[in-house]
Amino acid sequence: MKKHIKILALVFGLIPLYFYSQQGNYKYNNFGNRSILLSGNVTGSVSDIGLVFYNPSRLTELSKNGFAFNAEAFQLSTLRLTVLEEETLLNNTSFGGVPSMAGGTVKLFGEHFAYSFISRRKTDIGLSTNSKDITKNILDIFPDTQNYNFKAALNNKIKDNWYGLTWAKKLSEQLSIGISVFGSLFKYESSSDLSHTIKYNEEEQEEVAYYLMHEAFKQTSCGFNIKIGATYKIKNIDLGINLNVPYLELYSDGEFFYNQITSGVGNGFDTFYDYNYKKLTSKKKEPLGISIGTGIPLKKSKIHLNIDFVSGLSNYQRISISEIDIGAATPTAVIFNEARKAVFNFGIGGEIFLNDKFTTYFGFSSDFNAFKSNELLFNLTTSNANDMYVGTDFFHYSGGINMEMNWASIVMGITYASGSSKIQNPFRLNLSGIDFTDTQNSMLSSERWQFIVGLEIPFLNNKIKA
Image 1 (cartoon, rainbow, N blue to C red):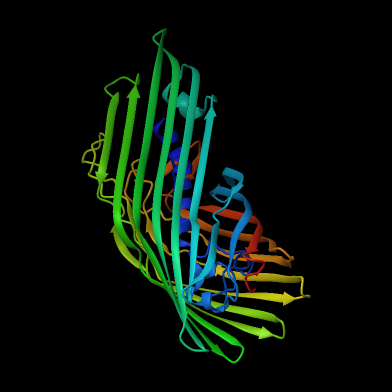
Image 2: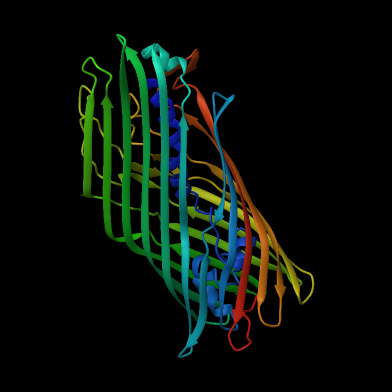
């Protein structure tokens, strides 16, 4: 039964790892109506409210004040886990809302200001499965099994909301500077539950064997994200640079829960472990980042180019958890570490002017995952403490159209992202003739379609300059 538990724990343990690892994909979510359709390649040329995120100095280039928001944004995501390059263990498709933003620009006392709310990251998934199939693995341990019930459930939530103020100033006709300060509220919680119930005959008497494992953690962090930008004009070419200051954490808290019950197995194998840790030392880190971009006009159209660099993070503990006793020869370490490597990303976008009413957009960008290790499975279901690295490199494609109306600007478009990564299996199993070892790789692949409708409403019949 324990071997059966391990392979199921692999499938369900990988899911929170996968969604968390997207925090190492720095361009996975883009913001601002036209900026989304340009795949975020707008450091030197952003022309919508997304400037608060990509380059706050571009605020001085907006000739009119206004309010903008992503009116509707939905995504269709597919996640597939294939083991031994032949057997698909998980194929999940979901449809729901995506992280978005809202904000506006104002001019007070001759200075340029903007306010914004950004749903930086948003994940809320619940997966469950159950089975009553009596397999060979069960019969090997309990030959007289009559009934069997297996249940597994996973819940994973990540919420990272930013509340920002932006200021910008034009120092000369060519040079502008700006700064965005975002207060951040980050919450991450995940839980995994596995249970097996077996009814069997033992010496002509009915017996019930039961196994339960529950793992959960919570992490909360409050702090500041700061972006400092500058724009310089050379004739009609816009050049921009944006500095992402490392995350400044003001408050943090962590919790960890573990419960394991084995009952009815006999021969001294019944167990009960229950751990509840609160007020744990916790850390959240985001590294230094630098983006450089340019906007090159081609008559009334424009090409957008971007290069992004994000530095790495040395290995550190996200939550500090004491060792626990779960029946091993020595106490079991509960590992919640993270390390990131430095990454470069690049991209290109374009806007094609059709007429005064319509402009089309397209974009492409790389999105390389920065994680070197992210041990969030706790490794309690394995026989060793190997790293569980689940990080995917994505490539993003986007396209859409901007329609200029008398009362507003409407942006509609679509984005597509795909990527896959090999996963080294963390333990050796031999189930029903399948040699499942730590030298064999599984494949985790993902596809995402986003459908975007954005709206920009000017104040006093004045539009934000596109």
